[in-house]
Amino acid sequence: MNLSRKNLAVIPSGGVVKPEERIFGLPEKVLQFGTGVLLRGLPDYFIDKANRQGVFNGRVVVVKSTDAGDSSAFDSQDGLYTLCVRGIEGGKTIAENIINSSISRVLSAKSQWKDILQCAHNPVLQVIISNTTEVGIRLVEEDIRQEPPASFPGKLLAFLYERYKFCGGSKEGGMVIVPTELIVDNGKKLAAIVRELAAFNKLEGAFVEWLTGACRWCSSLVDRIVPGKPGGASLQQLQEELGYTDELLSISEVYRLWAIEGDEKVQSVLSFAAADAGVIIKPDIEIYRELKLRMLNGTHTLSCGLAYLAGFVTVKNAMDDAGFAAFVSDLMLKEIAPAIPYAISAEQSREFGLQVLDRFRNPHLQHQWISITMQYSSKMKMRNIPVLLQHYRRHDSPPVLFALGFAAYLLFMKGGDYKVNDDKAEYFASLWKQSGPDEVADRVLSDASLWDTDLSVLPGFAAAVKEDLHALINKGALSKLAQFGKIKSVL
Image 1 (spheres, rainbow, N blue to C red):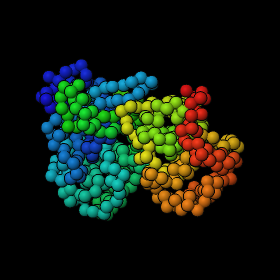
Image 2: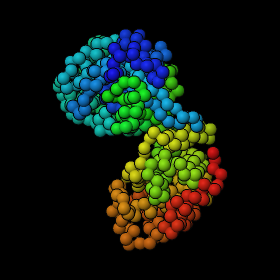
Image 3: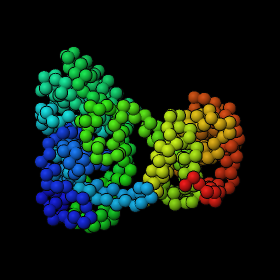
Image 4: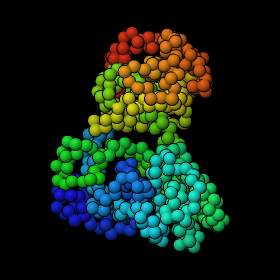
């Protein structure tokens, strides 16, 4: 039996959350550019949850912007799909299956462009969401009167111009635009590109003023791992448990965050935020970016080399080891959290850190360490060096766990029976051929072209890194980690 609106009545209710019939009559309030799993696993998840609570009461019309992929499953399944939420939250195992009914229809930009523009005539449609990957938010100088324009900003501008003409330039006709692409200040950057493209198309000044004054361009930060459709036996087992087949079935972790930059007006339009604490609307969302960048991403970066050298394949695999789990939790909560270069309370950073540790322990995510080592050097510079410098503004002694993570980075960059996927790979390979461990450490730490500063002048840091580097070479990463399993961690 395939998932569809017709078959909902005969799908067993025990193992899955099913939509009520009334939801299919809700109006379209959101235009969404993109059909990917991140959008279905996060924004559409929140909208569906709100609709089930009777809060937002609106559905999503999706624009398929590219020729890639097949959207026929959306049509055959009446826009329905199953989200299987799996993971750990507050130490408890979560397993929830939800039939999401937020999507009303999927329109192809290539073949249904006029239908997409017609959506601009819907007065209750007030929200635009996008996830076109990072390369989607870029300027392409093009005529937006094409059917359709080639770029995402071109399509968006054409839609907004159609909306402007329909509403006669009224402020009430403005849209709330929330890109979710993974670039900093995505809303501001998208707004600037659209304005520049409007000038290229010689659109009237009154429209440009409407773009700025009536429309809200909200930068946002998304954080949820949505691996998508499982393969082989896992998919078969899930569908047997559910009692139906689903071409769009996706797995997601429990943790979810959608931080949106906005005011009370944005809050009123995005009323689905009231349905889940994972949606946060505030005038400044930088604190959430800093928490994610330093505590989640930064911990990954400082531990990936050490984990790989110790023989761990996945994050979950490493977290099953007492020594590694103690190292990671203390690194994150004792060294990184207090040194985040942003005003964050100890309570807030600890709460976030404990959530991250739950995510690391999720048995349903197969996050490989070797993939985390990609562009190791640039990640170390962006995510971790500001934390190191902030630590030294407060202390004169080195952060010992940070030093171990940095030593493992140096050793990993030497290379071996694995590929070092890093722009600095040749630099490190050459350095290791010419030099011993101490000289490698000295030269890398003092290389301001790598870090924009000389790290060798930080009191005690070079000595700590060298000591750990020799221990990793002579005794191995597992031996070094074993000592942490014997020490009581912050947990």
